[in-house]
Length: 306
Image (cartoon, rainbow, N blue to C red; front, side, top):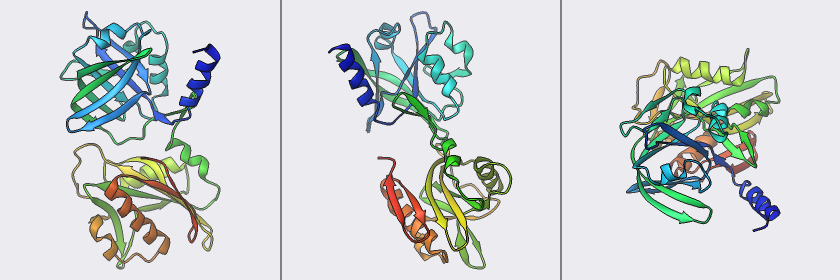
């Protein structure tokens, strides 16, 4: 393919928004090696398989295609610099980051949103790349928002949320799900989401303080709903939050865990919140979420994950 066509094709591929990963392993001298990749895909749940592709021009190509184990580290929003380190020619990349060895010996990057420790299952030739299929031996998710990549640039879904604010009176709510339950607060028999007004500081600071008040190890992900209450001159931002892998329904300082199947029986006075919770129950059942934006009566729902 001609050089200009290759560039056009690369730009067209870049229209697909992806996450950013760093794939790691050990070379023949047992030294850590790695490369940045956004060509990561889950393949199968049973057996647990994933894939990532590697350029045949990579200096680490022979090591990765001949290794016994490798790991995929999904970078968190704050790890742009880590991505840049592994996307550049740096002599000792691992001296510039914090990492630890897995039980298989593969490097796991500290602070990653999630990691998957794999046995190399299959190598498939694919043009100027090869596809590494890994069988997942162990994994962990911190439930933090991942670093995104779109048309050659990074984007940060959670950190960018503050740019959505256009009102002085802003309320932040946390929609936290764990094992088919969510946190609700009841006062005088009326149920609401955990909510805090933005007074001083940023939306991120307010959300962090709200989660700390609950006494739960939850992490903000995407904006799930943003809407204006025109009658009360307020803007509501609801964040979909998650807990790390294997979390249990821990006791809360405030609020209670409610079974999603019983949410409809709660007394929710706010019609916009009631509609939001009904939507969340439906979407949670299939694991496919959307974002709502509008006002307390009308708005649009757009899919952001599939």
